[in-house]
Image (cartoon, rainbow, N blue to C red):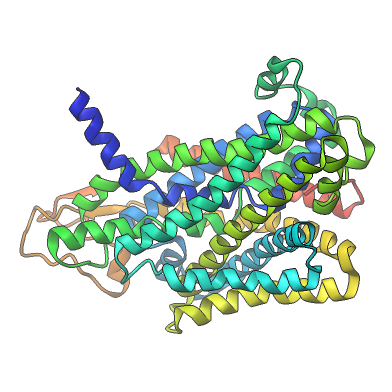
Length: 474
């Protein structure tokens, strides 16, 4: 029993990494102002919204893990292979827009953190955020690179994530919560969301800021290096689709690592922000509409200067890690949808620059107020795009042709490498093949469709309310 547990844990350790990278997408600086507003106005009552939003994120990300593991292709590549060209290009345009909008939040958060910590002007802070691209250029190439090098990259990002978590742990130690049970009750369903329109708006803002479109492409791609490593060691080659042995070896552990990472990291960080705000800023009217710089000033005033600096450090660490991940997602999207043959460094630099240029223009023209406005606008864009990019994910994972894998043990002479349109269509009707169907069950498909429709409908409602002049927090 002890040996068996040791073997499971030893194997699990080898899979730690991708889930942590995905969790970065759910705790970027774009989430902070919404969570602070929720805590300042409703104390701990909206913790339930954070918990539910992470459940939704886990469901969608598990579909991403399944798609990437079973097909050997990420979501973008599956769109290119399985969808009509016009639809593939349309979804690509929205995905690229989502990358730009997401990267804006990372650039803004990092630039403001640099201004607070080192008194670097915003304009130079924005320019300095280009440097994180160099880190990716040196370390990460999911195909054609040893798993050891991939693990080094994962450990580096994990270090930044750990620093972010430590910062928020320190923030929690600096506050006083007289009745700890109030925090736990916040994770239980309550009526405030349905009784108070503003609570509903903030809840929808938390939901929209947590479930990020680019994370779907990221999650479906990060599983590939371990599959390639397994097949290379066992069969001496990497085919266009992972072997059934590789899938069975990886899938359950990839699920477990993802779920644990999202709940231990993303849920904790987003909850900590709201708890800190709820315990110190509750009832303060100037906290309801606080931007990132205002949050720093509020924490500095109501808790201590040290608390403000810790928040700035957290923003720097999370902004850098999220910026790296977002740039990586940009490469995945561009190469997957368009099958670009350009060097990886040019794709990454292009992705980063198209997010930085709008920030530079706004910073030069409107200053800090403009930075806040562009961050708010980016969250509006992400709210509308999420349902568009999530729909193909559900379709692919529910499709038996795409999600059926041939058992390589049925015929040792059959080469598992296929080309062109056959990549997504195994010969499941041929009796000489023994195939395994990994497509979603009816329950999983219905659950995914429900989450997709709910998020899409609520996000559209939120955006239209914003356009009608309601006080919305994205």
